[in-house]
Length: 387
Length: 131
Ligand SMILES: [Zn+2]
Image (cartoon, rainbow over all chains, first blue to last red; front, side):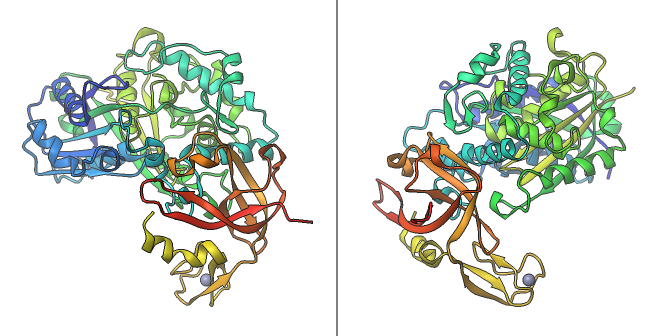
């Protein structure tokens, strides 16, 4: 397998986009990524999406978007792994170019979650769990995370305020990201008094549903210098898989798929935790951030919330986290999220982030996209090209 | 949920029927076709007694549409006495009276109702035991 590089990025702002549909958002992101790379075509298109079939009556997105983006492709297909759909498409694009099967590929994530009056996004998101034995019992996707949070607080004698630092950090960073959905700072008091949606999870523990699309262009690393932008090398992109149902895991507070995928990625890239300059984490819920940091080895089990302070996760901290606002404040357009994370990490490694959120001298980033309750996890290690 | 699907799941919903591996005795709920521990396909039905304790729980305020009439309702992960963990709603108890470790037992109740298709789903919920 040859090394691959990212040479183009594109994204639309995360919003409620009443004026553009699934295809307009995705095509915009694809065209912007191609313009950024200064290429006129790509050999293959991989689309990450979870709910177009359920909410927008639209499947077969590969062919649809290749056509509307004006691409001449040898392959175009869409991939689904709940909230991990974006990274699933990214990994497929990486593998296609790395294997030599194609010379260039586009990965795009797209999701349209607002504007549906007759079908419920809450019901759609619940299809990430077992339809017959979880959703059919009234378990929403938020409730899954609430079960984890309650148990976590019980087992580790952890107070709810301990999670607040992750939320405050995400909102703080999003203030400087023009593509973010929520660009205002929040304070501990607001967090403490936010409305409950599934006890103990309140509105501010939870990322907002939104519309969005983000895309990248991938080529072989040895050709990366021909392109206009500083290339970012994909040093690893590795998966972990666990049971779909929370109930089938021996210890639901230990996310096995996060551990597997992180260890594999670090091994492939030949690095360890201290080599990472920033982490785009899957902070869909503050408890998920905590569990993932622990399972990835950044904290001992039960101590993840000790990282939730500016000295550790702030832009100038030891491990800058969710530097563009994360899922929490940039917004969580489910199947597009994994691609926003990649686009943001690439921006950091090109040193093109807005000043206030640029991690100084960023060389290496870790990106982690989580599907379901960590049933499918992709960890990617990106590195600024040394040349 | 469509009628054949509701019908197909009746042994699980009404009788809490899971499965047991004949080779290594591992118990599962929901039932499996192959044992996740020893890979044996020699599997037989196993009916759980319906006693257990609460592993974790949450009170849901933003429901799936077919559960709107029950809001707020309590969902829980329950450790069955025989071993497996199961996802179910709690009933006959106020949310503020639920705690981790609390003993519960199975009852049959209305689970959900879909207004458009009219199918009413019945099945297991769990409640504190009647003394
Ligand atoms: Zn067995």
